[in-house]
Amino acid sequence: MLKGKVALVTGASRGIGREIALTLAGNGASVIVNYNGSRERAEEVVAAITGQGGSAEAIRCSVADFEESGRMVRDILEQYGRVDILVNNAGITRDNLIMRMSEADYDEVMDTNLKGAFHMIRHLSRSFIRQRSGRIINISSVSGVTGNAGQSNYSASKAGLIGLTKSVARELASRGICVNAVAPGFIETEMTEVLSDKIKEGIKRAVPLGKMGTPRDVAELVLFLAGESAGYITGQVLHVDGGMVM
Ligand code: NAP
Image 1 (cartoon, rainbow, N blue to C red):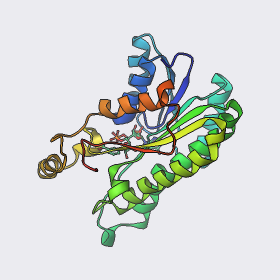
Image 2: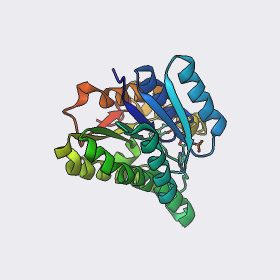
Image 3: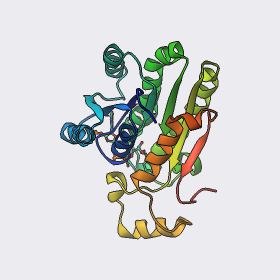
Image 4: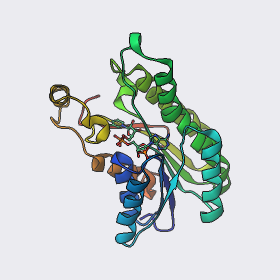
C-alpha cells in the first residue's frame, strides 16, 4: 500500500510513534524513526521493522531545535531524495495547575509539541511543494479540543497544532498536499502510565466505549490518512477517543 514511500515519524522510539512507525513500515513505507533521548529503544523499533523485512533507520534529533531539525531534514532529503509522509508525533507533558506552572514547563511543552511540528513542516515544505504531493499528520489530543485542568500548557500546544494544521492545509492544498490532525483520547502508553488508578477509572467512566485506547487504534487511523484512500481529506481533526468527544 505504501511501497516506495518515505515516512518520517517524530518521537517514534516508544508509545504511539513506535506503533505508527511499525504500521507504516508493515505496509511498505521506508520509515525514519526519529527520537530524542531513547537511542536503544529507537534501535529496537528499527530492528523490529527490519526483522520483518521492512526498511527503517533511527535518527536522533530534538524537534524542538530549529537548527537541529533542519539538519536532520537535509540529511534525510540527501539520502532518500524525498519524504512522502510526515507524522508529527513527538510530544511531552509537564502537567501542573496554572497557579504553579513554571515558565520553563510552559515553554518546554510548547517548544516540543507545537514549535516542533512547525519546525518539521517548515523544513520539509519546499520539498513537499516541489513533489506536488505529500501527507502531513499532526498528533494533537482531545485536550487541545476540550481543554483539561492541570494541562494548560499541553492543551494550548495541542490546540495550536489544530490551527497550524488548518492553516498549512489551506496553504498547501493547491499542491496536492493533505494536512490533517489526529486527536487521540486516553491511550495506553508511558505518558498515561503515570496516572493514578483513580484517575484511570475516572477516564474509563468518561469514555462511552468504556476503555482506554491502544497505540494501534491511533496507528490504524494514521495509516489510513497516509494512504491513497484519504486523498480527498485535508484540514480535518479526526478523533480516536472511544467517543469521549462528540
Ligand atoms: P510517550 O510514550 O511519552 O512517547 C513520546 C515520544 O516523543 C518518545 O518517542 C520521545 O522520544 C519523543 N520525544 C519527546 N521529546 C522529543 C523531542 N524534543 N524530539 C524528538 N522526539 C521527542 O508518548 P505517547 O503517549 O506515545 O504520545 C505520542 C503523541 O501522542 C504525543 O504527541 C502525545 O501528546 C500524543 N497523545 C498521547 C495520548 C495518550 O493518551 N498517550 C493522548 C493524546 C495525544 P525519546 O524518548 O527518545 O525522548
